[in-house]
Structure formats: structure tokens, C-alpha cells
Image (cartoon, rainbow, N blue to C red; front, side, top):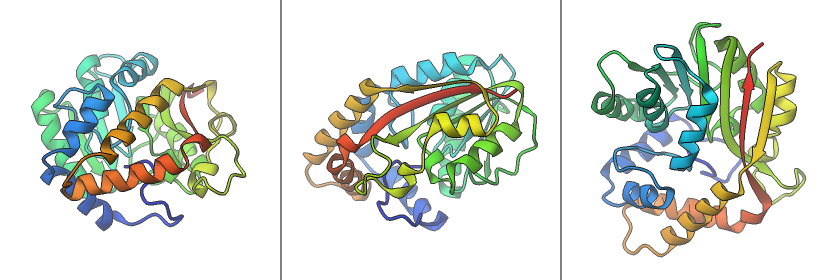
Length: 259
């Protein structure tokens, strides 16, 4: 899933995102510029804004054991979860509501992971379709704000984790929750409040200005790209919206443990 796209309160459906992911696959420039600005390798199919250093931090904080089960919820094209599974040897299940994204994730996993280490399923933040209490670790990158409300997704995440299982999230929060310039779905996010309310323990929420600066550099660079294809036009539109409200948002990461 993406970050600020679209700006309206109502989230578009799977058909919209299927086309969005199809445009990415057809683009000659979108992935290359995102990889360069976020420090990602060319093979990692990113659909969000986590940097290479951010992936390393999530890997460390998830503490997923070799052959343990890692869930990547709202996985998009699967790049981040596949990379962490590659580093740790964990089994991976990715969930997203875009069938087009999941087909791309399956292709990427076949290139990076042994057969049978990863699978991908259609589901949502609130209805993953997965059994409870089975996962050693769960990640959700830049997508929890799409749940209505985010707290409901955190309850689902807790249901999925074993006792002692680790959760890692990245997203944005409003500097001022009453700021009308910030999209309502971002204003609804309060990770410390909601992770605690969902019953997680060892909750740690961190502001990440270094990640935020990487976003600004990406958006400013994307704006200057000539003759864009459909995926680049979408990225430019997203960047334009992001820069308009840049000072109103904070970049956040959070970890917690299921009791």
C-alpha cells in the first residue's frame, strides 16, 4: 500500500490499487528512482518509503527465529517482508487486498527465497483470514493508517501473534491531531495510545526524522523528472501532496510484544 495516496478520506478499492501496481510493473523509471533515493537494492520491489537502514532496524527488532513465522500485513509487492525472510530464514506469509500486488510478490519471492518459504494471500488489515496465535513476528509497513480505525488493525495483529511474538510498525502521525491539513486517516493514528489499548506490552514508539528527511529528498527529486510514465505521474502527485503538508507529519516506528 502507499502512503498519502489518495488524499481523500475514502479509500479506493482493490481495482484501483490493482491498476496502480500494474502501472509500477510497466514503469521504466519509478522503481529505479525510489531505490536510489531510499538506498535500496534494485531487486527490492518497494511500494512504500522504508529505507535500507529501516529494513535493518525492523529485522533486528522483530527478533523472528529461523524457521519461525513472519507475517507481512498490507505487504504490497512483498519487497520488505521478502528481504527480512531472506536475512532471517523465517517462513513468510504476506497479506494484501490487491491480487495484482500479490502476483508480483510471488514473482519476487521466487527470485529471492527457496521454494516454499513464502506464500501470499488476499486479505485486509482487519480481516487477514489467518489463524490466531500462530505468528512469531508481524510487520506492517506504512499501512496501519488505512484501517478504520487503526486500533482495530492492532487488535487483529495481537490476535495473530503467539505470546511473546513481536510486532513492528512504521507509519506517520500528525504533529497536531487537530491540523485540518493532515488527512483524517493520519490524524487517527496514535501508536502509543492504541498499541497500549490493544493490550501489547513493551511498547516503544520512536520519531524518525532521518527517515523523514529521506522522504523529502525523494519527493523533491521526483518532482523534477521529465516525461513520466503512469507510475511516475502517480509518484509525482503523491509527492506534491506530501510536500504540501510535510511539516505537519512526523515519521514513526513502533515495536511491541504480544503478552
